[in-house]
Length: 189
Image: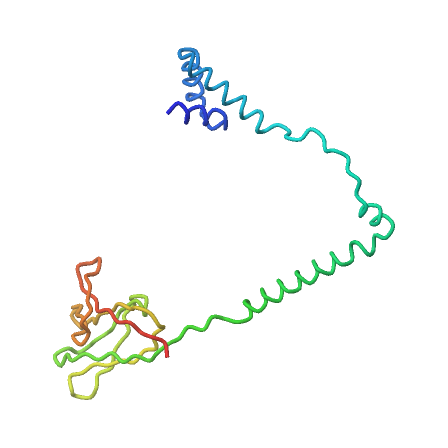
Protein backbone atom coordinates (compact mmCIF):
# COMPACT_ATOMS: atom_id res chain seq x y z
CA UNK A 1 0.00 0.00 0.00
CA UNK A 2 2.87 2.36 0.74
CA UNK A 3 4.32 1.88 -2.78
CA UNK A 4 0.96 2.82 -4.24
CA UNK A 5 0.78 5.89 -1.97
CA UNK A 6 4.29 6.98 -3.05
CA UNK A 7 3.45 6.45 -6.72
CA UNK A 8 0.30 8.53 -6.40
CA UNK A 9 2.32 11.29 -4.72
CA UNK A 10 5.02 11.25 -7.42
CA UNK A 11 2.42 11.36 -10.19
CA UNK A 12 0.56 14.19 -8.40
CA UNK A 13 -2.66 12.14 -8.24
CA UNK A 14 -3.49 12.77 -4.57
CA UNK A 15 -6.21 15.11 -3.40
CA UNK A 16 -5.45 17.56 -0.58
CA UNK A 17 -6.59 15.23 2.23
CA UNK A 18 -4.43 12.42 0.84
CA UNK A 19 -1.45 14.77 0.60
CA UNK A 20 -1.90 15.68 4.29
CA UNK A 21 -2.03 11.97 5.20
CA UNK A 22 1.07 11.38 3.10
CA UNK A 23 3.09 14.14 4.83
CA UNK A 24 1.99 12.90 8.27
CA UNK A 25 3.05 9.34 7.37
CA UNK A 26 6.45 10.61 6.13
CA UNK A 27 7.06 12.35 9.47
CA UNK A 28 6.06 9.27 11.50
CA UNK A 29 7.89 6.52 9.58
CA UNK A 30 11.57 7.11 8.79
CA UNK A 31 11.79 4.03 6.51
CA UNK A 32 8.82 5.27 4.52
CA UNK A 33 10.45 8.70 4.23
CA UNK A 34 13.74 7.21 2.95
CA UNK A 35 11.94 4.95 0.47
CA UNK A 36 9.93 7.92 -0.83
CA UNK A 37 13.02 10.10 -1.24
CA UNK A 38 14.80 7.24 -3.04
CA UNK A 39 11.91 6.82 -5.48
CA UNK A 40 11.70 10.58 -6.02
CA UNK A 41 15.43 10.65 -6.85
CA UNK A 42 14.87 7.81 -9.33
CA UNK A 43 11.96 9.68 -10.92
CA UNK A 44 14.11 12.81 -11.17
CA UNK A 45 16.75 10.86 -13.09
CA UNK A 46 14.16 9.33 -15.38
CA UNK A 47 12.66 12.70 -16.22
CA UNK A 48 16.06 14.39 -16.67
CA UNK A 49 18.12 14.65 -19.82
CA UNK A 50 19.68 11.30 -20.60
CA UNK A 51 22.24 12.60 -23.05
CA UNK A 52 23.73 15.94 -22.15
CA UNK A 53 25.46 16.40 -25.48
CA UNK A 54 25.88 14.49 -28.70
CA UNK A 55 29.36 13.69 -29.98
CA UNK A 56 30.48 15.36 -33.19
CA UNK A 57 30.52 12.97 -36.11
CA UNK A 58 31.71 13.41 -39.64
CA UNK A 59 28.95 12.64 -42.09
CA UNK A 60 29.91 12.63 -45.77
CA UNK A 61 26.26 12.53 -46.85
CA UNK A 62 25.63 15.85 -45.11
CA UNK A 63 28.05 17.72 -47.35
CA UNK A 64 26.53 16.04 -50.42
CA UNK A 65 23.07 17.14 -49.32
CA UNK A 66 24.16 20.75 -49.08
CA UNK A 67 25.54 20.66 -52.62
CA UNK A 68 22.48 19.07 -54.19
CA UNK A 69 19.35 19.44 -52.06
CA UNK A 70 16.99 18.53 -54.90
CA UNK A 71 18.48 15.04 -55.40
CA UNK A 72 18.22 14.35 -51.65
CA UNK A 73 14.63 15.31 -50.90
CA UNK A 74 12.94 14.48 -54.23
CA UNK A 75 12.95 10.65 -53.76
CA UNK A 76 11.69 11.08 -50.19
CA UNK A 77 8.94 13.42 -51.33
CA UNK A 78 7.80 11.13 -54.16
CA UNK A 79 7.71 8.15 -51.79
CA UNK A 80 5.65 10.13 -49.30
CA UNK A 81 3.31 11.41 -52.01
CA UNK A 82 2.84 7.87 -53.40
CA UNK A 83 2.01 6.55 -49.93
CA UNK A 84 -0.54 9.35 -49.42
CA UNK A 85 -2.22 8.66 -52.75
CA UNK A 86 -2.42 4.94 -51.95
CA UNK A 87 -3.91 5.59 -48.51
CA UNK A 88 -6.48 7.99 -49.93
CA UNK A 89 -7.36 5.47 -52.65
CA UNK A 90 -7.84 2.68 -50.12
CA UNK A 91 -9.96 4.96 -47.93
CA UNK A 92 -12.17 5.94 -50.89
CA UNK A 93 -12.47 2.32 -52.01
CA UNK A 94 -13.86 1.28 -48.64
CA UNK A 95 -16.09 4.34 -48.42
CA UNK A 96 -17.51 3.83 -51.92
CA UNK A 97 -18.44 0.18 -51.42
CA UNK A 98 -21.44 0.02 -49.10
CA UNK A 99 -21.77 -3.13 -47.04
CA UNK A 100 -24.35 -5.39 -48.58
CA UNK A 101 -26.33 -7.29 -45.97
CA UNK A 102 -27.71 -10.52 -47.29
CA UNK A 103 -31.45 -10.89 -46.87
CA UNK A 104 -33.75 -13.83 -47.28
CA UNK A 105 -37.50 -13.90 -47.77
CA UNK A 106 -39.02 -15.80 -44.86
CA UNK A 107 -42.66 -16.90 -44.56
CA UNK A 108 -44.29 -16.99 -41.14
CA UNK A 109 -47.49 -19.03 -40.73
CA UNK A 110 -49.64 -19.79 -37.69
CA UNK A 111 -52.87 -21.74 -37.36
CA UNK A 112 -55.36 -19.78 -35.22
CA UNK A 113 -58.88 -20.27 -36.63
CA UNK A 114 -60.62 -18.73 -33.60
CA UNK A 115 -58.79 -15.36 -33.71
CA UNK A 116 -59.90 -12.36 -35.75
CA UNK A 117 -56.47 -10.70 -35.83
CA UNK A 118 -52.86 -11.92 -35.76
CA UNK A 119 -49.63 -9.92 -35.76
CA UNK A 120 -45.95 -10.74 -35.60
CA UNK A 121 -43.40 -8.95 -33.41
CA UNK A 122 -39.68 -9.59 -33.35
CA UNK A 123 -36.14 -8.36 -33.48
CA UNK A 124 -36.55 -7.82 -37.23
CA UNK A 125 -39.54 -5.45 -36.68
CA UNK A 126 -37.93 -3.63 -33.74
CA UNK A 127 -40.66 -5.32 -31.67
CA UNK A 128 -43.35 -3.28 -33.42
CA UNK A 129 -46.43 -5.38 -34.34
CA UNK A 130 -46.86 -6.11 -38.05
CA UNK A 131 -50.28 -7.36 -39.21
CA UNK A 132 -50.51 -10.82 -40.72
CA UNK A 133 -53.00 -11.74 -43.45
CA UNK A 134 -55.72 -14.35 -43.08
CA UNK A 135 -55.35 -17.17 -45.62
CA UNK A 136 -58.94 -17.60 -46.86
CA UNK A 137 -61.16 -19.54 -44.43
CA UNK A 138 -58.44 -22.05 -43.58
CA UNK A 139 -57.70 -20.66 -40.09
CA UNK A 140 -54.11 -19.87 -41.07
CA UNK A 141 -52.47 -16.45 -40.80
CA UNK A 142 -49.36 -15.69 -42.87
CA UNK A 143 -46.83 -13.02 -43.72
CA UNK A 144 -43.61 -13.02 -45.78
CA UNK A 145 -40.81 -10.72 -44.69
CA UNK A 146 -37.28 -10.03 -45.88
CA UNK A 147 -34.92 -10.82 -42.99
CA UNK A 148 -31.22 -10.03 -42.78
CA UNK A 149 -28.94 -12.95 -42.09
CA UNK A 150 -28.41 -13.75 -38.44
CA UNK A 151 -30.33 -14.92 -35.41
CA UNK A 152 -33.82 -13.50 -34.82
CA UNK A 153 -36.35 -13.70 -32.00
CA UNK A 154 -40.08 -13.31 -32.51
CA UNK A 155 -43.57 -14.28 -31.41
CA UNK A 156 -47.16 -13.87 -32.55
CA UNK A 157 -49.71 -11.51 -31.00
CA UNK A 158 -53.35 -12.51 -31.17
CA UNK A 159 -56.41 -10.23 -30.96
CA UNK A 160 -56.75 -10.54 -27.18
CA UNK A 161 -53.09 -9.50 -26.62
CA UNK A 162 -52.03 -13.09 -26.09
CA UNK A 163 -48.41 -13.69 -27.10
CA UNK A 164 -47.67 -17.15 -28.54
CA UNK A 165 -44.53 -18.79 -29.89
CA UNK A 166 -44.26 -20.39 -33.28
CA UNK A 167 -45.25 -24.04 -32.79
CA UNK A 168 -43.21 -25.07 -35.84
CA UNK A 169 -39.93 -23.77 -34.37
CA UNK A 170 -38.21 -25.82 -31.67
CA UNK A 171 -35.85 -23.11 -30.34
CA UNK A 172 -37.54 -20.90 -27.72
CA UNK A 173 -36.36 -18.64 -24.89
CA UNK A 174 -37.91 -16.65 -22.08
CA UNK A 175 -37.99 -12.91 -22.63
CA UNK A 176 -37.55 -10.20 -19.98
CA UNK A 177 -41.30 -9.67 -19.66
CA UNK A 178 -42.43 -13.16 -18.65
CA UNK A 179 -43.22 -14.24 -22.21
CA UNK A 180 -41.50 -16.59 -24.58
CA UNK A 181 -40.01 -16.03 -28.03
CA UNK A 182 -39.15 -18.34 -30.90
CA UNK A 183 -35.61 -18.21 -32.28
CA UNK A 184 -34.65 -18.70 -35.93
CA UNK A 185 -31.35 -18.39 -37.77
CA UNK A 186 -31.37 -16.94 -41.26
CA UNK A 187 -28.41 -17.72 -43.49
CA UNK A 188 -27.79 -15.34 -46.40
CA UNK A 189 -28.20 -16.75 -49.89
